[in-house]
Length: 445
Image 1 (cartoon, rainbow, N blue to C red):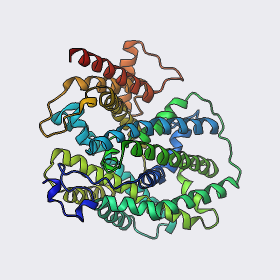
Image 2 (image 1 turned 180 degrees about the vertical axis):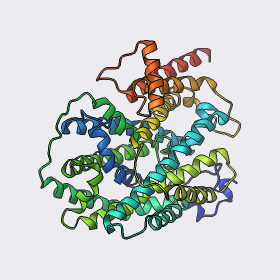
Image 3 (image 1 turned 45 degrees about the horizontal axis):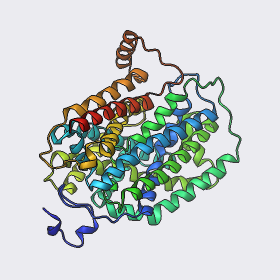
Image 4 (image 1 turned 30 degrees about the vertical axis):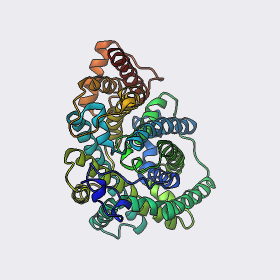
């Protein structure tokens, strides 16, 4: 199917097949509103607990440390997202198809599968938090399964018409979300915020890694949306502006609410406890579906890299059903911190390799994004080195996995200090090795 085969009405929506030229209909405000909505999440409110106490055990961070870690992690992470999004805007290709130029078509299936796993996981988390939000609003009067199924259906419908959804977000939802955030900020700050006890700054960089991991989880999704941008500069600027403000604001409110509630388990009660809080909280619960929509749609786009001739609407429908089914038995966020570590260790170094090779390496001459793009095995090296670097500095909290990497760390004589950031070091290692490979390739060329 080519662009000529598409009807005028279809040109207003995302292409159905992988090889169709995408419409460039998203303005700066469309994209900024979209990323603002993605930056605000009920998971972000609860995830603030991981920033206050990254290891889950004392000592935690003081308020100033938690806010600074949130700022650093958010800005660093979304800068990586903006860089990869700019590549999507330039090439017009979805995120996983972009990786054909970096790794070759066959090797691009490796990060594609990783992204499918990540997006399905995030989709399940998002439907679960919607159910928890509705439960808090209704005092458990609505059955969990009913909420999950209803949210899953809405998510699936949204993923079938993604560009229309983005325009709706700009016109209506973003305004309502902004009003809700302002209202909760005023109401929560009217009450004293207790300073956590027994804190120090030793967990600062693990907290940075946690917020960075949430941001950088959008690295393998960004181009799915920025490919519809009118320019790479517009895409990058809108991503940075919309998401940075929103995620910091979201985590700020989460930190305040957790400290006032005394426990992350009661965080939603804090929001509902303010005057007319249920109205504005309901707005945030409803807009949570744009998070699940983004993950379902990007899962479909990732699968389309494997099956380029399958209609994305069929893929989105199947993914929506799968995510909904997986979310039905889930009731909590156990393992959330480990999920963030896994995401960061995979996609932080991938962002580094992608950005360096596209803007300074072979991408300057134009990547081969066709179905026959040859394998570039050497580009797996910096990605793998970045992954290993991340694990050495922050192997997470799954006992057997952590023990293995601690043994490796002891074997190589590595002793991380309080200044050690797994995310930033992994990005630096992957970027440096990629830069060396780029220089070697230039000299041979």
